[in-house]
View (cartoon, rainbow, N blue to C red):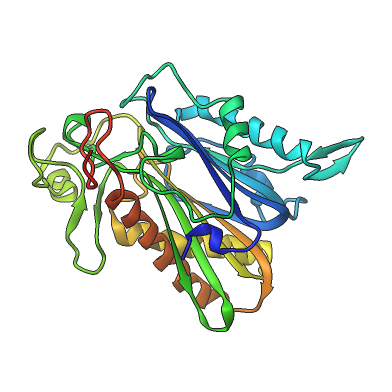
Length: 318
């Protein structure tokens, strides 16, 4: 399976700056897709999110941009729009094509060069690089500077990145997920309950402190800045309404809850986008079960395929 690009009509492109340790990822659906969104974290950074609301007039989106760089990274979405508009993608008005490209960012300024961010040129390059090939995973695109397990600071955190995973259902129905995992908490394997990546006991250790247990033993207030976010995109070839796409995004969030401990905190900006392309028929509840499984699988792949970068150790080594 190829990950998110298993869904016909979706192309994914990454651009990574390994000097600054940041990047962005463009998810293109040029023929248009019905979209939904669910934001559970309290420190999100987004753009054009209202277009995904079931009551919004817009009934299709043409791409999604995920980026590092904190709020500065939102500029990269303009590059995706520029690329799509030149290709004649989007709503046509006044002689111009207007593509709808919601965007979300994660905070990676603590690992590389904090004064270098994804911008318009990087977003345009990510869109131009988009293909239907198997999704590149690990420390790429929006996951270039992603880390997890930051309770005790970056010196005891672990590297993360981007992962993608597909669940196949009867009748040719597919549900696929892509995740850029920059969580405050630890990542656990739902099959075993064991931490696979997270806050370490010391800068030289590979033993985990167990973030949730440590939090319960700590001071009454967590403190710290909102430097964390898991960004997810769920896509299916089943035909959904905007209400159903919104519900699919909500269901997908259960995949975060099964793998990230703690999740959806006040210092995370966790968000899940959903995209519907195709004409397959499937019950939304069954799709929701698959979406949670797909996102959990994508999150595990994001940490397992991440290499050591910027002095932060990854599970895949150097």
